[in-house]
Image (cartoon, rainbow over all chains, first blue to last red; front, side, top):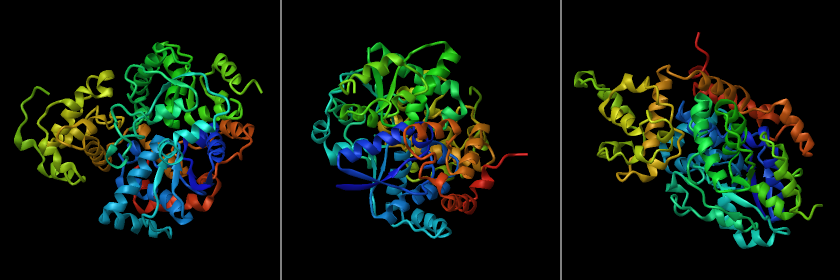
Length: 299
Length: 175
């Protein structure tokens, strides 16, 4: 059994606890034990906090990495934003001695030191590279018969310099992992477009941010999918809570279910939508819940 | 933007500081092909947002116009332009550097100030609330996650870090 620390971030534990729970369940079933990363903080969000003060961003991000270094295990995140902060901070501090020295002076004040001994992993690239699509496929007891719009999100694959995940224009690893559950990944317009939440835009200019989310929802709906599958609680929130905001501001109604990959995988393993918290989304869709309740043979 | 730019108004020191961001020296290689803006998802929805123009202004040293620019905060950091730039200019990294310079000059949007303070205080940009404590319980989980929320000593570390870096003062409410 492999071991990793589980970095929760903010939005998964504090807005979509179903994603946190689903991740623990599915990884355990795949023989990956997730250890709690006790006392971790906000990653902190790459586009927004790095825009305020780079040293603070690096110091807080590296503190989270150091907690995992001290446990002697690589760190796993289920959020693109957290991945963006933690993988970029981890890599830059491994390479840049000056920055590392500046950051370590700050960390020394709390009795910690960045050593650069671990890797930061995102669940999608970890599943693809280390677990493998074959093993994921073998874990499926009930094929997930859904048409899915895959939303990679931005910080999972970009900046690509340190990620080595293949093409950023036409990536396929996420689609392959979705299809391993029995679902069909459907092509849709501007599939790789941003959800609009990042960079502090959702915080500062909600209406502008929602225009980007609305385009994603429109394109996914036009492709006739059952749901959008993401691997980022912030994209998740933007496209889920965003639907109620879009309805208020622009009048568009989508009823588009948003599902995190951990939850999709959990369905195929036989867990119920309620156990995985899929029914806890802010945009309600009873028809979809009824449909996915049947996946586990109606148990 | 139709006014003539006077070289005497340009701030070369500002440009030099922007160029201290690692990789930013490539900015001088920009030949204004506009590929960054042409592929920009934000620009599709907000045509006034033009990252090429913002970076051009940085390269010229248009400090005040840039730090107060109404669209400086529109980039979602999707990194598409940075990936596609034929000259290898790290557009987003440079834009984020310019934003930090704005914040350090006291220019910060109200909602950004609020989220910065919230994170500095609670350790989370999005802290737990009652609704989600209930959801966690319903899922058979502890009310509080195993983050700074459940470890006061860990939260103290966050407080210490934002104090040492000056982040708490930098982002505090303006009177």
